[in-house]
Length: 276
Picture 1 (cartoon, rainbow, N blue to C red):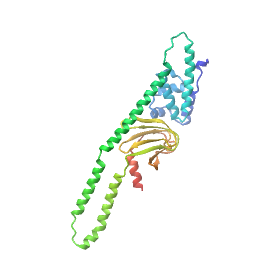
Picture 2 (cartoon, rainbow, N blue to C red):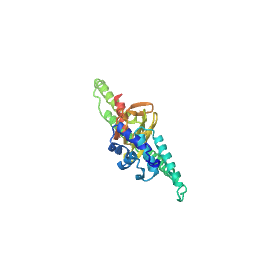
Picture 3 (tube, helix red, strand yellow):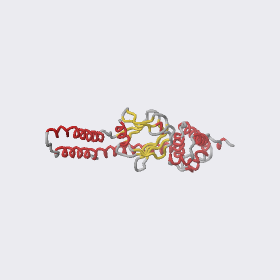
Picture 4 (cartoon, rainbow, N blue to C red):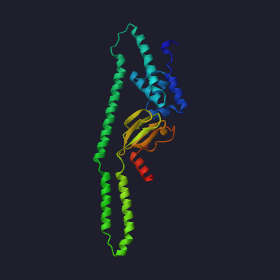
């Protein structure tokens, strides 16, 4: 086998890690939303099937990160091999295309910048929606007004009757106040935080990808309690919900693979309040 066609070891590393994790190719397709033919091309190192270097680099990084491999090292190995190939091409009597080597970086940078802008826009719109939606406060005011009217319309027939009714009325008011407080106390955001190294993807209710990357201990992503999200990860036990510094519980079991786990942050917070 000549040097140019010699395997780089990238495909073998990906295939071995996937098999060691007990994952079928179909599991990875669902989790990463990358076509099986492209994933197979990575494992076979048949990179010519992919649309271009930008896709190759992106897919290697995403696939390697998902399998908890050193994605940066895999990407660097491919880049080094690509440079060798480019130098050989320069020795051929063909015109050199100026700037070709920089195109993958330009394309990758443009894609990342676009995703960053999209993330900021989604975050801003979610926050704006919270400000414009007075439903929780309206429900609380209505409940309080109804309770006050009910209390005022109850006649007191005697002093003894008043004494007997004081405790039940106070209890009802306390329960109503507690219920109203629980609605008002729901914060506008909570965090999903990494308590171990893993890969995580977060989608909004419309299926738009808000985040997809490797996360290390302490990394976090803010979720709005006014929205519903879909989480994907290959280690649910490495992720936990936090309200400030308060741990609200892990997303799932250790090493549990999630591909379409739907979460509602508001329910998570209320469940914690009810438990207390």
